[in-house]
Amino acid sequence: MSAALPSAQILPFPQRASRAPDAAQRLTRAMAALDEALAGQRAAVSAWQTALAALRGSVAGLDGSLHDYQDALGALRRRTEALHVQSLRLEAWADAVTASAAAR
Image (cartoon, rainbow, N blue to C red; front, side, top):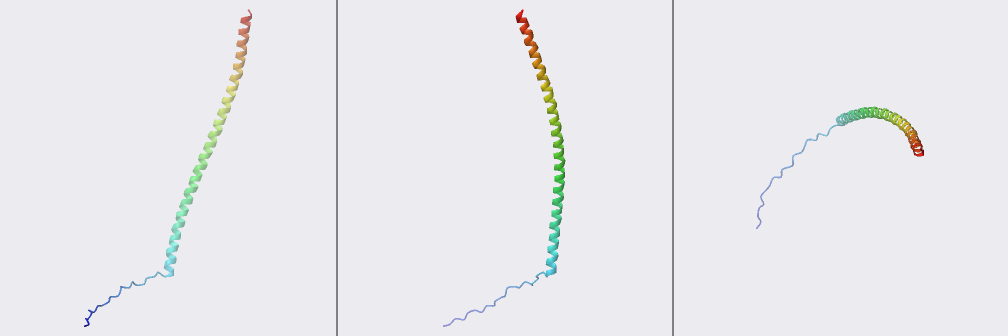
């Protein structure tokens, strides 16, 4: 006994239409992407140059402040040395006065 198998119809998968871009289209897209990347780099370099200019200004300001501070410290040192000399004279005078008072 042989049983008859039901027949089946095999449906093929739908085929996509081949739409491979041609070389000119690929080149156009690549050039557009390159232009966009270059524009981004130009903007980044410009921002970097602006930041460097700001840093240069800040460093120049700090340099000026440092020189002013050094000058102020130099003046303070000179005044302190003068006060030290004056205090030694005053100490010597006080010692002389004390010695003469003790000798009486």
